[in-house]
Structure formats: structure tokens, C-alpha cells
Length: 478
Image 1 (cartoon, one colour):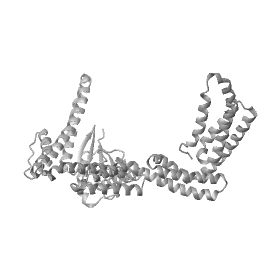
Image 2 (image 1 turned 90 degrees about the horizontal axis):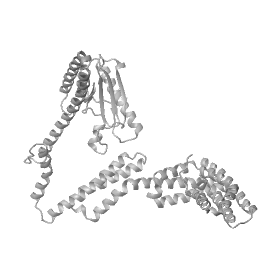
Image 3 (image 1 turned 90 degrees about the vertical axis):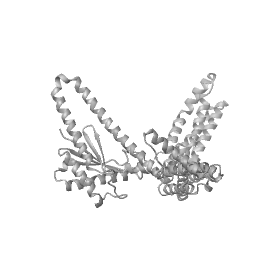
Image 4 (image 1 turned 180 degrees about the vertical axis):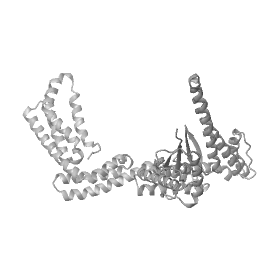
């Protein structure tokens, strides 16, 4: 079992530094030191590798004391025999420490593992009081084991394991939650609740959710981290709201003036998009207008990327026109035919049902309207209509091979997400094989990618929804 670095091992480093800092005039004494102390240094290295400083503190400390005494006697010019006696005692103590450390690795396994996890969580920094209590209890367990009291050692090791786990959890929570806690306290001190109570309540609820998630599973930190980040945003939002609303509360700004000022950011965005924002029906109308313009720009960007790729192909062909003139004409015709088929596929779907992309010669159909129940790979009957349109799209390229990709967001463990994405891809594959008789099973592949290929930000609800998807890739043959 690997051990985290143990501070007691620093004794040897400090002692060796004292030796190697001797001035040149004492070179002869240094050579004598190396000849006398070399075997003990080698044994000390073995003890450090076994974690004896942590697992056998009694014998390890005794060895260090004898080593220091031998050093002192060498500096004071005492007899070689007395120095050797100290080093012999140091060797014996180190050998006992190594044996005790190896026994501890077997006897105190769970406590050692808990300690390593606490070290990984930086418990000494984020939960120093709990860490010290755990360290003291573990040391007492190791000392009991060195004295041969295995029963008492195991009992204390169990206590140490519990304390290390408590320290680990406290450190994880502190690492992810303390900054948000401090911000909430700061907002409460400023009496932000008076003007933004609902937003403050939301921040507290998100923080509590994050803490509960970490308590249930301290090792799956994706969701708690996002919840803590959302809580931090909400409390910051509440502080902004309180600051913005304070002039209204103090009658320095009228409600009408406040509402008109709130419209200005949307007006600026609409103006940049060459649109007129009208608020006669509230903010939703200009917001929908802006979203529609953005959707149009995104579609134009995709078409532009596709056109640039085609231009690059044509430029390469032009360089070889004399040799490939016939081939070029055929390719242009094939490209135009593929574009026609892609337009035909796009026309099958209503807005919000599916997105269609090109990837070189391949066509990617993303049925964004297809949603699986949480944790399930069951296709609900209400999506059969959408999948019938997918069938029609597949028939547009009758000679294509098909890859059905399953994807998830980052919440949950990597293994569970990978398994779930594979199951959902398999479910769509089985559905298509059962309903498109022209498809050969060997031409349809299902692949689960879990959370490894996000297309949006996993830190937002909308982004995670986009990442939970099925992609159907058509690969025309020939």
C-alpha cells in the first residue's frame, strides 16, 4: 500500500543536511561520516519507503535519537567505538521500525486508506482540527501495535479511520462550499434579505443541496460543485439586486425609471442585431426576437463553415484541373446532390425536433426532441412520431452506414454515464432496425460516449440538456 508523505521522515533529511553543509576543512570528517553512517542511511531510506515514520513512530523516533547522538559524538570527537554503538542501536531500531511498519500496512489497512484519502482532500489545510485529532488517534494505534497490543491497535485504528473520513468530508465541503458560505454571511450582514429575500433563499437552498450531495457521495463532486457555483451566483445576484433596488426603496428613483433602465440592455442587443426592441407587451417579445436572430446567425455560421470546406476542396481540384477535369465535374454534381438530400432531411423536422449538420461527407442528425426518462433507456411512445421522421431521413441515404451515438451530461459517475449512454444508443438502434426493413444490422452501430463529448457547458441547466442527446451519423458509401 502506498503511503502519503510522512512528516516524521524529515528528521533524516535535516540530519543529513547538517552533515553535507560541513566546510571543506572538515572533508576528512565527512568521509569518516560516510563510512560509518552509510549503512544506517541506506536502512533509513528503506524505513522511509515503508512509511515507518508514520506506522512505527516509537522505533523510528528511537532510531532518529541514536542517529543524532552518533552525529553529536562524531562532532565532539568521541571514540569511534561509542559512535558505532549508537549506530548499532539506530540500525536495530530501524529494523524493528521496518518490521512494525509492514505489520501495520496489513493490520491498519482501512485507517491508512482513509488517511490517504484525507491527504488527497488536503484535510490538513481545510480541516486542521479534525486532521490533528485523526493523526493523534492513528499514532496511538501505531504505538499500541508496536507494543504488541493488536486488539487495542485495531480499535484505535477504527476510531482513526472514522476521524480521517470526517476530516476528509469536512475538507471537501470546505474546499467547495466555504467561499459561498462566506459570501452568504456577507450578504446577511448587509441585510440583503430585506430587498432580495427570494434570491437569498434560493442561494441558501442550493448551498444546502450541495452539502447534502457531498454527504451522500463525497467522491462525485461534479453536481455539488455546480450547485455551489449556482449558490454563489444567486447570492451575488441578490447583492446586486439589493444595491439596484436601494435607490427605489429610498425614493431616489421611481419604479417607472427603474423599469425603463432595465429595458436598456435588451435594447442595445437588439440594436446590434439590426432589430427594434418593442416593450409594449413586456420583455418576452424583444427576447424572442433576439433569440430568433441568434438562431439565424448560428445557421448562417454552419452554412458558411460548410461553404468554406467546399471551397477548399474546389481549390485543390483546380490545381489538378488538366488531369481531373472529368472527376471534378462528377464531384460537383455529387456535392449538389448531397446538398439537395440534406435540404430534404431538414424539411422533415419542425423547429425543436431535430438539428442537421454535415461533417465532411457525413450527415449528423440530432433529434433534440427525443428525451429519455432520468436514468432510463426506454423510448416512450410519444416519440415514435419523431423517430418516424428519422426513418424517412435515413431512407434519403439508402446506401449509408449508420452510427448511433449516445451522450450524457457530467452529472453522475463516469461509469454509470457511459453505461447509460450505450444503453440509449442501443435502444435507438433496435428501434430503427425493427422499423426500417432496408437496414442491415451490420450497417448500424451503437456507441455510448458518456460525458466525454459535450457540445455545451455542463455548468448550466440548458447546457446539460443539450449534452444529454442522441446523434445519428449517416456515412454514405462510395
